[in-house]
Length: 537
Image 1: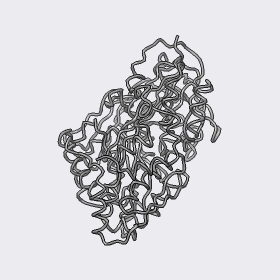
Image 2 (image 1 turned 90 degrees about the vertical axis):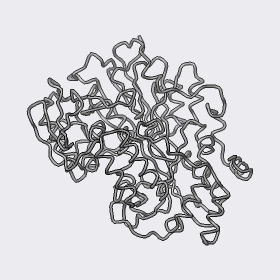
Image 3 (image 1 turned 120 degrees about the horizontal axis):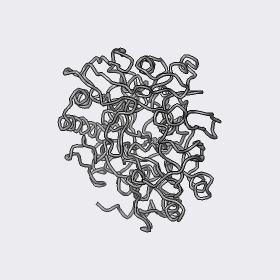
């Protein structure tokens, strides 16, 4: 369905900062960057030098147990290795482990063999005791954000110096994927004993670079690790992460040479960076999503028992369907993101092996939306308060949603707040609808369990339905990919009917780099890896 003339006219009068910057979605001057561009760069790299990297936000505490930010994961990717990782094809591979886990027939015992002769960046030996100490901290520390990731683990046992065994409460196939993220990061036991709850102020892990210092709101400095087990791969002397929140300033610093790498380029700046003969852009990400979370049952906090919420959208599935049908995801992608994201209405990426081909998104249907609004009997215009982070792009998105849904009979009031404040509102249930997203995980369980099942800590909408919970739980215990995909499809289809989250797109991450920089690895998790990076010889 074509967008209505009224909608086109309304969108045309919104602030068009995007248009001035062009982009592959609008200017046609350059093709969208390919994720293969980074991993395919095999130029020789000379030793030495400092790489200045612009981050789009200041990470929270650099503690793998408590961290919750994507930018924190970007820093960890170069100083805190995990038991497992993903490769350029999003395949799970061993990192501090020597092989993928050995799983018992009933799925409840997971044995992991570890690298030998490895040292933490403070010289402490890496062994099974250290692994147990970190995993137990992730699982049981009251301030840990990893508790949900490792909830299935009942006990960690040291078998010998290079072997650990995890005893599970139930079979849990996504465990390896969880251990390929922060839940699998192993910290120096010496540094844990010394730092305690304050470990994030001076983190020590196994990694190609070691933490050297941090100035809050300004920069984080990493230096080449002397004790790294694969030190011959590492070329750079130092990485300096500079916190540059404004996307236009981030792009300008890249063009001026003040930084040689800039993360998460705004889609409004991609074409301008690509047009510079000294720069290039590569893309990563795509595992995560962004959308509108509607409060359907979060009456007292996301981890509390769901209860009634007194808003028009919460009380009426009809109205939620009407709100959804008023949205045109393709137009949103083109208007707000220059066509550089991937429109979708489900939380699992379209190219995932776990994405059932039968999951299809409805097109915008304004006529049906208007009919549903009229049939609901609720007087129009129907008030909806949409909370949005206060950056320019989210405000633009909120305005587009406001105009689209107005045509169906909704009156959306946009309430802006700092990004962290929107998360706090989400957790507490003090919202009507909120814009938020998730950076994504390679196993779909990481995009679903904690986000749409009953009392999940990130289930801000307060969704609670056995038609969602049960298939997701069954899929986590299954090992066959086809069976798991079918179960996830069943759960996602039910979630699409409940509409506690209206998914809008899978966001790609665009990394700007000076053409002298080589050896960067950039995968679908959107984390730039600099272990083999440096300046071209």
